[in-house]
Length: 476
Image (tube, rainbow, N blue to C red; front, side, top):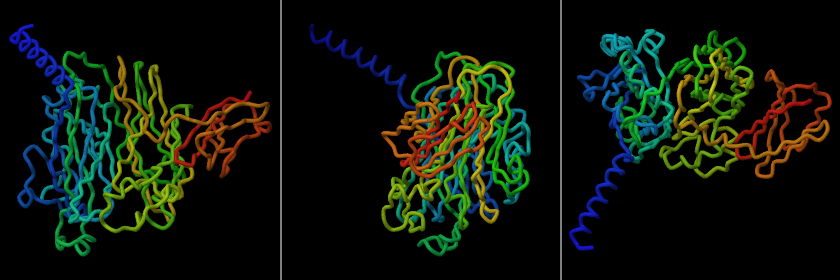
């Protein structure tokens, strides 16, 4: 082959490779770039005193909003990742933040009119959805900041797989009637840093945040899926002691019903829930079993918290009582930590698969929650997603759920339990109604069932690595 032909062939090959790379190239959409959050309890900082970038609204000191442009939505594909980076300004404590997708009628005058932001630095007057039925809010990412000294110069990364939003963002019919807004929310307080952190005296700014959505493919030439999105709850402050916060006072239960007029080829609930209450014996420091039921199906059992918070120690640059001065064992972390400062709160996905039309009853129950001294709360958000053709992309449960490794088998009236890979530290036997029949600490190798009637039972086990397993079985 002569040199001119070789050059032509290599050029064509390079062009083809380049086109393939363009098709699969990662695209990054930046919506907030080091946006500044201010004291959550103070009057809203005026744009005249602290300008806001064009296209971004400061709803209050802890919340911003920006419209997702149609041209961006057209370029977002099946694979979506939400990335947030937080740096400290003048707050050195662990605080809660979130990223929310807001659906708002295009008939509304302006975003500010709909959310009822008061003029002259007034406070936010209500949550979206509570003030205007044309607004629906979906929490798609929640996180906790570390204890940070701004002078240490640390940026804290957070990431979530949000591919389940792909059918919603690609719904052109929905976008003809609704605008999609992206909110960035982070509650901070500067008072401790004003005296403890050099350079923070008299300052009101608490954190800076950057937010990107990243996609690795596009919707080009793809038919739109018929999809249904139902926001059911946003940061409901679930507890057992305040009227209206639980389904029944004295219990910790959140209950929602969904009616479907049509069958779904794939469906899921997205649940975001964390446990707070820093008082003595508070809910932040006690890991409780959480039970999720959909109709008569126990869909998920989990105990919040990582196996260890040590991976996040590097971000905690301010001395604090959570991390202490030295490395802690996994057992120590599992004894008190529901979440790690510097970590995400998991998006828990309850995958339903293909389901027929009808009624679906969702219940989250935390029967062991105490709320010592009537303090603490569980901010709880819930959204239903379904498609009537195809699948919802990116569906997977969180990493700490895993697949059960324990083997269960019958031997007469005994249930034999073999757990070769993990040690069982606590177990619970429930009947079909979800009532606890037996609870025991320590390992178990067999359970006698002769005194229990014919029925469906669920065996829950807490393992030594902090994960939970549950097995459903039928006693004949």
